[in-house]
Length: 522
View 1: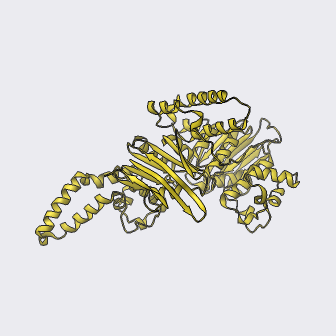
View 2: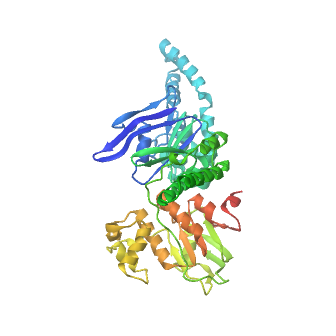
């Protein structure tokens, strides 16, 4: 369907890709992963023809149409939502506009223009053009775009809805090759579910860059890892790639382990994974491919994962938290519940500010309109807020000195050890905290939270600004935590693998269910 042949790209001395050879075929979904700055989005631009490689070429089979998810929300401001969606099929849209122009001539149309109009109508019919508006409307309805919005100009539409419309544009008209960079960004859960179901039924080629592991696990049949200036393709979804890569890495570190033992361990792992076809579209053919894998087929990633491990300074007693009729006008009303040992609560809300305000009330950061919050005597809470500006803004301390503020042990080697867990080693530990990136600040906050050794954690959108490696490390740490936890996150994999209780908090509704995230969704 589409192939990259000996593709190389270099900026100055920096080599992004060297002699990349890949073939993407119909019926498969390929997830492109890699560290920040590795070139994932750049590779998509090469595939889409936006960037030319220094060497090599992209070859697309004849008569195959590619659709690329547009990132510029203002590119189609003068179109209605319906027109924007239909415009995703460029040929069809041009025929539609040309047809409208010729129809507008009325009796003044020339013979040549009449012949052209007849040709257009034939092509238009072949492309199912008469159903275009209905199909576009149906797609927007599926994404919960109200009918009155569909006829509005894009410039007058809320940015959150624009995201869905641009996604519908990319999907419209059954493209042969679908290329998408972070398609789930700013989508609500209903939108993500709709997209997952659409792609699971999609028969053509899909190539995706995404930080959403749950999404990658759900839809991907292959993972393409951008590493070592190469792009290595593996069968399976993200979880399978990650677990297998980590297995091989551990085996490489065990120098005395016999090769035959390593091969048997991998074989056993693959057999367990291939038996579970429900994680993606891995049916019989995918299972056979997995079973053919050997230890030489998988190269461990060079990327590093932060080590997140939340330890408790003291055990919890029987009484953890009691909340009675907690109300904050405009956000939630009469919220009451009790937390017990071992509970991990995912807090859902239509507006992320609602969860943040709720957590601030629990921690005494803001005063509620009414109600009470009572922690048990053995509880030592630790809070990671979604907005960490107050911890870093205007602060010129080094990372070492910044973290010392939150530690009873202040010896530099001890502090550097904790920073090393969060991938700040050597000179990196001496950077001023006011110049850190968003992801680096979150990793610092995670180090602070671990040092506090709380037995009750409140984590508000902890994955914000984090890359896949850091999110995976955080997910592992949350799963291992032995205390009580409340958290809000857009990362569905964390919700699916950590939560055993779900609370949905909104201004007019409070739902509290003892269930996993999967059970909650039904």
